[in-house]
Amino acid sequence: MTIRFGEYKKRDISFLLNFVANLFLYYTGYRWWTVNANFFRNKQHSFLKSRRFLWKKRIVTWLFEGKQDIIGNKSIHQVYAFIKSKRKKRKNRKKKSEKKRNSQNAGE
Image (tube, rainbow, N blue to C red; front, side, top):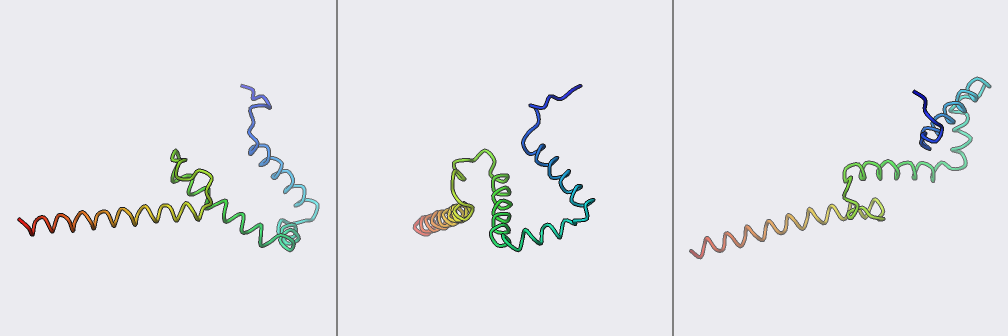
């Protein structure tokens, strides 16, 4: 069974390139922490922030797969706020229905 080049996905190719680059850097005397130290010195804050954001987004999209109307093009914080407001509304609705039921029972 042969796999044609076109069947590879971008992430497979990027993984392979990353793997080869790391091997090259390792065997030429660089260690990953040396390379990262130079990188982080310049872009530490923005890089870490974007990484955190990406992981949160991945988790949320995984949790709500197929519910694109919830996520759409919103930021992660908007999604969390949306979920929180839904819970709050549900709780309030439940309280109202209980009050109504109690008042009806008291009237009878």
